[in-house]
Length: 182
Ligand code: SF4
Image (cartoon, rainbow, N blue to C red; front, side, top):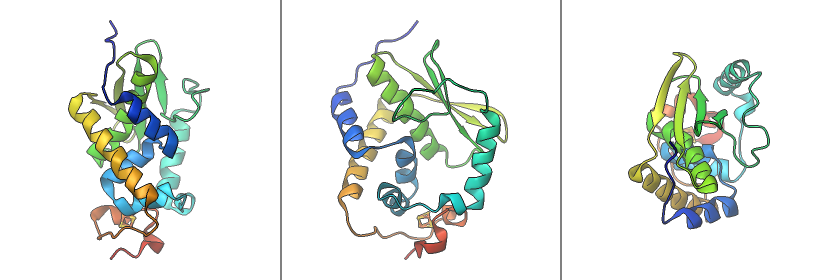
């Protein structure tokens, strides 16, 4: 049975997402590194030249070569949708950055819940281990997404590159070659 969806911030959240043209990856980036989120918001990306991203894209293309569940879903880009059971799936090559990836997956479930008025479930599918990780769309997760959307709004308005310290993620970040972390 599907649970009806109610969230007081739904209208304001949706308005911000539309106005800033936010996508799931913004919500992943902002949990990991504000500089990375800022670059993504301002259209700076060298992902196509990065080895890690190329491998991830190849894995993704192989896994979902025949999947058509997300066709026609303009502005939203999860990897697969089970329309019958209201479950949205996001695939990742490895199981790292759990909270940041969970936010990305939950973002899709939240937008689908707002759009349909039914509560959606979110699942991260880890390709390297073939494991599923369910992300619960509870009050805490929605509050986290709300706060991330506020941070993204601030970053979108900011003209200066935010300061950033070297973190473990830098080793595999597609922006590392020209980031020059402080
Ligand atoms: S290289 Fe590190 S500091 Fe720079 S954007 Fe990537 S994750 Fe952030």
